[in-house]
Image (cartoon, rainbow, N blue to C red; front, side, top):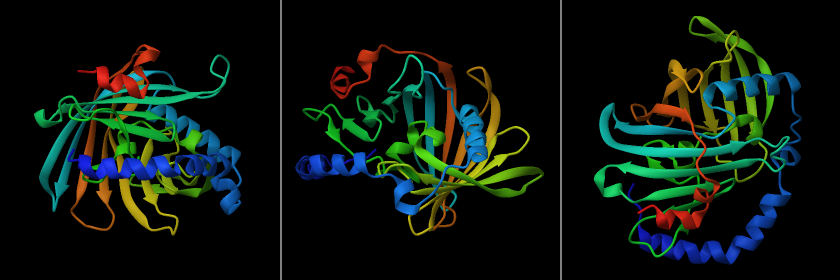
Length: 273
């Protein structure tokens, strides 16, 4: 991950200056009020089932290997160790939780770097920084992958969904759903999502801009047992605008694991070394 620390120092000043206004906007704004989208109960049930296929609904950890391809040739690789502390609002967790700790494993030049995500906010730390600095979840990390992509997302929590119908996905029948983000801080404004009808296995997701331009397209592959059920252990993310450019996300060592809550705060990033 190549980050210009001088750039981020300047960015930090701007972020600090507008933080109060931005936070007020995030708290007040929802996608539902912007476009008048109403939640479809049947679509929500489908999304919830697919969410549990993609990721557990309790704290877990996984190794993520990213490989970016340009014109179908390998261009760069990166390996991350990701710990998720996720609970949806409910008994015992009234406020919910959506925090993640991301540790950079390789290449060697990334050793000691880390990111921390807490709902809409994200911070980055490297050994040559005095303290963690805020970053955008939309900022590109490697290839077609943004910072926010490496953290497992719960679509039901982040999006309002509507069922648009059924259509063929290869030799399967899929539900086709339209998702619109609930809040401005959610990484992608809209998603068109295909979920296999019989299994609720995610098949494909098109990530779109506010103007309905497809920015990238993800395919869920390599379904295997992991953390108690069959899950996709590979996601292939294609650049919708540049043919031949794509990034693979390969998951391994997926396991239920609850790290101490003290690990999930931005100041902890400085203690990882």
